[in-house]
Image (cartoon, rainbow, N blue to C red; front, side, top):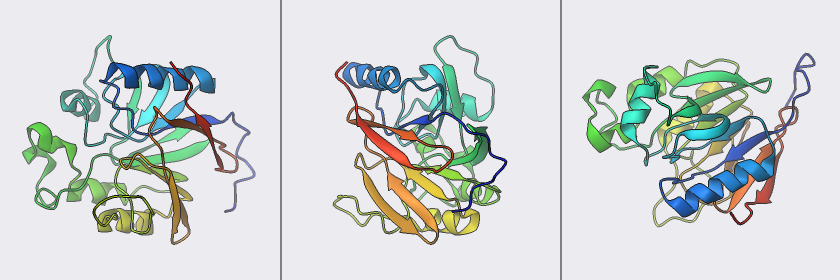
Length: 225
């Protein structure tokens, strides 16, 4: 990986896996990770379900969210005191700590993939659709891509074959240096082409620091709340 010489030195950012923070114990663990990390900005890999956070957090929607909140964030129309410091990446990108971070929100359902997003209702809003993937594939100069589904080859323990062909296609199109994956509640590492792929453990178990200069991750046990 060749880093731009013009990239200014930045402090590490916090990386958090699935939070499921509607559960009080999980929410306490999430905030313990925020406190212990000491960082000023975070990336989060979905299944957040609590949106009043202590520092700016760039996240992708998972398959477990408050989808009314997610829809409002998608359309930039949410004004609520209970939603603070969250920035949704939904086939969009943001500059974070000198990195260009992209994200694809949602998980895959074959019965919904070819439908227009406007035709998804209720819990079906959890899924990404073809138009979401095609939009994400147009993102340029992405250093880090966030996905809830995994590409093929990530060695996580599930009772089904892990790997989504549309995540494969996304990584082939965008060619990020690093892809961070949620959903599986397990740390795992692989490569896909020239992209390093890391499955992130859930926030109640571990949190990570990401070095913006080297894209190296360091893992830390989430302290007791």
